[in-house]
Amino acid sequence: METVCCDADVILTIYTRGLLHSDAWPRIREGRKPSSRLLLLPNGNSCDFLNRMMPKTKERFYEIAEVTDRIGSQFLGRHTVRLTAQNGTDLTFKVGQLAGWSHSGVGTAPGSFILLPAGTLNLGVDEGSAEGTLVIDCHTALKRELMTEKVIFEVRNGYAVSIQGGSYADEFAAAAAKYPNGPEETLCIAEFGLGFDRTADVRVSPSEGEHMYGAAHIGIGSNGSFGGSVMIDAWHIDCILEGASVELDGKLIEKDGQYLE
Image (tube, rainbow, N blue to C red; front, side):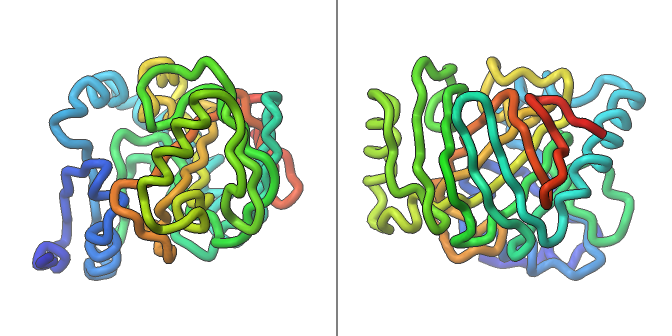
């Protein structure tokens, strides 16, 4: 892949799921000159998503930017995160070794990376650090519809060692087994994210759910887009939790889906 565009002052990329979790994306992000501003927009197949999620007023745009910066920026750097929820989730992991971004939508500074629609935090989880239980009963990117049963992942040394539940758990395990990389990669705990947009609704789609105020998500699979060692083409499944509670280095930042600051 040629990266001539990376010499530009401003780089506009129309992204798809495949781009963000392919080996092309790190080359675009890391190959640009340090002062280049990089803007990512969803492709034309996401027009409904963009129409719903893009703020209709300047005031609304900066409201989302403010809460994203205020909460999301606290997570940038080396930290220990504990994610819990009333559905049984209790997962602890570290962040900071891999890349991470707080997407406020504002990209005036040289070297900015802007992902639109704004209003999300996306962090690569340190490889091998995740421990505990992850329970998903809302949405995963495998399907558009809301889940009707729980999927329980037992996590050790950074990846899920078991997947329990009903037919949905079997479906997830079967989808992961199609890749020859083995469980240490296909079931890698790759990403942690939070949403900051009060107009977003998880019931519309998983993509919108990632932006929903107070929702957390865990990405399972490829972490190459964050600079990690796991690169599995088109295998990165975001799993969304409503009503999450989050501790950052022992300090409670969010309780039951409401930010405390």
